[in-house]
Image (cartoon, rainbow, N blue to C red; front, top):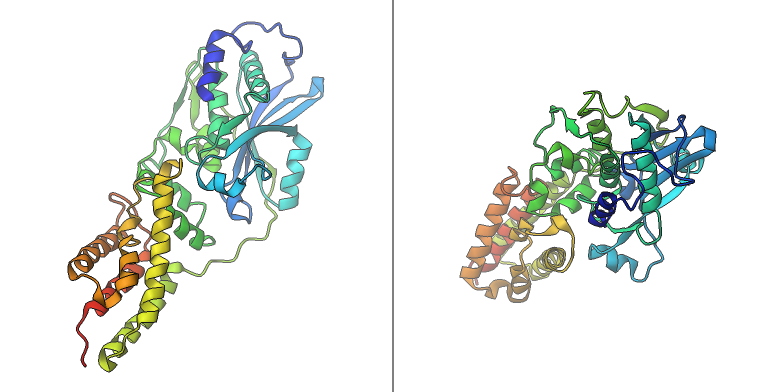
Length: 388
């Protein structure tokens, strides 16, 4: 849809050429302004990354609207299945500024505003772009968390409204971060288990180094980048410094129990059981079957996200090294498993453990190091000769 929009702009069908506007009802007054609204994190996981929207205000016309690209409909058929496959349509919604703010007052989330230094013509261009995008035939778009979301749409609409001017970004101290590292900033200390789940679902593409332009998939990073974007003609910042409209009042989330600590404790327990097993000649078939079945389910979920969805960053997921489909075979065969197949899986587990220590070619969550080691111990235990 973005390509279609820019084609319409180029063709002059959106009434936004860089000249005076004649369309009745689409001309803002001299007192109008546009701003970017950035909303802080909430207590729910899906709100932990913040939110972005565009405000168009014209006091003389009694106009004060917020355009929000982060809206979706829970009532669509097969909602969860559509979302899981990466085929959920989001849409542009429009509400009054007061109604928009009421939601964040209720949730106790912070809101910042950055007024844009646009010319009157550019401001009107932005208004027409948003109003046209709000038409039923244009308002829906295929959501992508990293490449097409509520923040990237804000970035693209602002960039698309400029007349004969371009934007340049200053280099920041946080250059060459990856999508994964940027996500980590939103899951610091309080959402460690969610971070683990994200890391298991995302693949190699999430570890690509991002440009400043790509940083703006994150609402908070969008706000930071708009502080550094300058206009080509004046060399002034595109946006004024962020102003706090609403201070955060929500109760902070309690710190998460560390997944890494949890799995290290579990590893110690498994190691003790394994040593007793070797000494007593036991066979922990029930434990191994449960463990291997759980890993097999994780493997099947990763395969589903890789091959059967449209999610951009779930492809080429090297978590398959430790959550391998081979564990389906091991769960069935146990001690009768082929030693060569076990050897291949042990090499894969070693590779996964190495990748928890560095991001090349994919960062595997450090909490999975003891998990991979535990799986290796149980595989070796299954093929180890037992005393009669």
